[in-house]
Image (cartoon, rainbow, N blue to C red; front, side, top):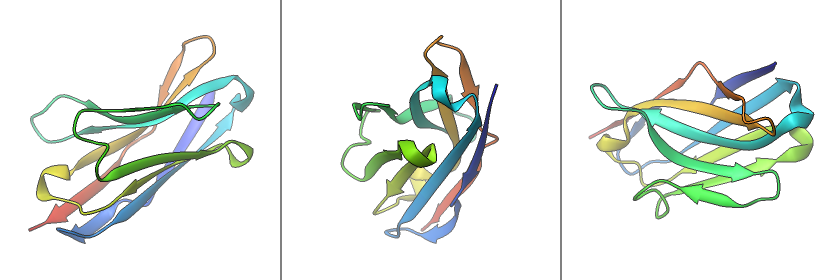
Length: 116
């Protein structure tokens, strides 16, 4: 079992920045991939970015120019730095973890709102 606790969401003006954090606990030694997805109202959940234990990253479409994912393996934490936020970035952002067994876990989500 893995538990995920997200923080860092909130309300920001368009053009502003936020940094999300997600701390994992439990069976942390079996974690391979950590990352972030987001879901806007009325839309499907979409990939923002993932990062492996070794540091390899995958970004969703149009996510690489303003978002940066990073990870601190010693602290079992994944971060998402979001810059130049736009109203269309408004969504619930979910922390994601995939174990070496391919079992997946999701955080409870944190709201990010970029106002115009």
